[in-house]
Image 1 (cartoon, one colour):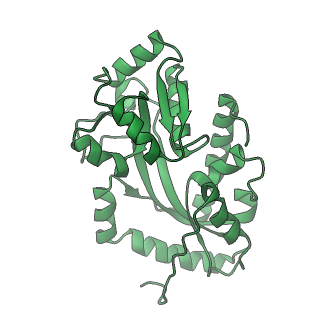
Image 2: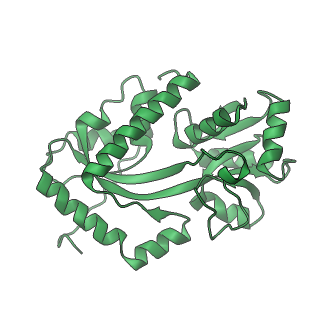
Length: 267
C-alpha cells in the first residue's frame, strides 16, 4: 500500500534458512529483493562451518518487524508446579533432566541454554529437527521441557496439554496473566525474544533503505497489524536502519559468546 506496487513473497526454505539467506546476498543491491528472516540469521555463522555469508558484511538492515517471547513448557505429567520446582529438581539431579530444542544452535536451543547457564543448572540437550517434532515427546513426558514460541504453545497451554512455568518477556503477557516471567522468579537479568526482520544486500543505497523503512513503519503502526500481533503474544519492533544494524551487531556478538561458552562445535 505504501510503496504503491505489489510485493511477492518467495519462500525459500531449506538448510536452516541458508538457501534464502544466500540467495538474497547475491541479488542486486537496489531494494527490490529483501530478506525476511528470523534471528537465525545471526546464529548460523556461529554454528556452521561454512554458512556462506557474513551478516554484517553481506547485508544491511531495513528494520525489525516483530518480537515474540518464548514459554518454558513441560508435559502435564512432570511434577513441577513452578520454575523454582524445576530449578530445585535440576540442581538435585545434574544432567538427569532433559530439554528439547529445534536443533543445535537454533533460537530455542540458545534460549534454553542461556537460562540454564544463568540459573547454574546442568541438563541434557535433546535436539530435534524442529520444535514440532519435539513437542510430542514433551507432551508425553519423554523429555522434561522445551522453550517454545508463544504463538505455537499458548493454545496447548490453554487446552491443558502442557503447562507453562515461565515466559521470557520482560513483563507478563495479558493473554497468559497467570504465567510469571523468569525475572519474577529469581532471574532478574533474564529475558529472551525471537525476532523477525528485513535485511537488504550490502550496498543498498541509503535513500532506498529509507523508503523501505518508511513503508515498514507504516505497516507496523497500523492498528490491524498491532492487534494481530498482540493476539499472537508478539509486539512490533520499530527501529531505523542504523539502529537495526547496531542491534544486529550486538546480537551477533552475543550469540558468538553464548555458543563459545556452551562449547558447541560448528557443523
